[in-house]
Length: 503
Image (cartoon, rainbow, N blue to C red; front, side, top):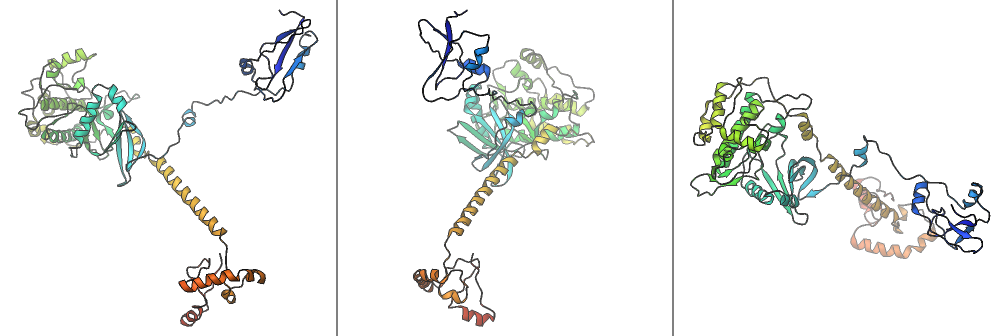
């Protein structure tokens, strides 16, 4: 406890608050004064704001001892009421709207960007609009920063761009434009806009929790398009290396598009066979020779095996080879043992066995696939049909560029209105001048003195008008009649002379 001979004291200055954090004491006998700055924590806890003072320093001394809080009122010198802290509470429902960013139109070349519709490991996919053709496209945005973090990321991106420039087929994703931004270190690939992938159609909903399968006629239609696109790739000596339902996109017309050529490899056109030394595809879709650790592989045979696993997945909803980890998975694939459900017809079962043959030399080729009975015979169409998932369909039907086009149009309209208002104000500020010779046709609002003061200026303007052959009246009509052409016009048209209305 402090001594009773000491008196609490504090100061109010221009740089501090009027509330003390710790009062210092002044000795009556020695008459010394110690001033201490108040702390900011005190102001924060009590909800006060520091008041601004200018001028001399004020020292308040209390000569009386403490009186159980009765002298506290003397400390309230020019106090302001406490101000609550600026804390705003936001409900969880309005959190998205509270932090929503203002959408602004963004152009990269001739393309207007929309919202993101997909996200990958090293790329992002957005919707865009080509202002030249007004066609909806998809843009695949690759950041070099993420490519460097991904194993072989930069090489995969370069391979995909190089191959897509050469390919042009209805069942291959088409590259329309490629833009590189060195300043932002980004790559923009403008490709076809598709609705969904086959993998998204097969994924089961959380509510239903059932395995989805394609009807035989629908799976047959998709598989025929897959073989047509794969035959085109092999004719260009290109091995995809990663055929799977996730890399097979479907357009709104149910046309299949093969995409994701990052792991693809192009053979030398003078090579004697399709031998390759590496494969970076998905483990569940790898062939037995890769699972067994062979040094070289047949590239065309790898794609055929992946097509067989894809067809098995489409008609059964499951994968032929499954395991808990990649080591057990490769052991299962290396043995080549799998089962086909009993409800699968015999032609389809034999076709799958030919695609998933463990011996690469006995595996079906593209020519044998096209000659197979199940491939040539179109299954009868039934009422069963696996539609697009609602989430993907809503994503495609939602025109994400609507807000950006509205913002772009709104800014254009506002700029036009501002220009129109400025021009209207300039027209109102112009001075109206009436020629002296036209007083017989116009009743001037000016008095005689004002007319006489402007006589010299009007004569000079009339001389220029006669020289140029036209009038300079500021009127709202399209043609202005002067004193020289009124009589001939009246005689020719046989009506009263046209009168201009001053604006």
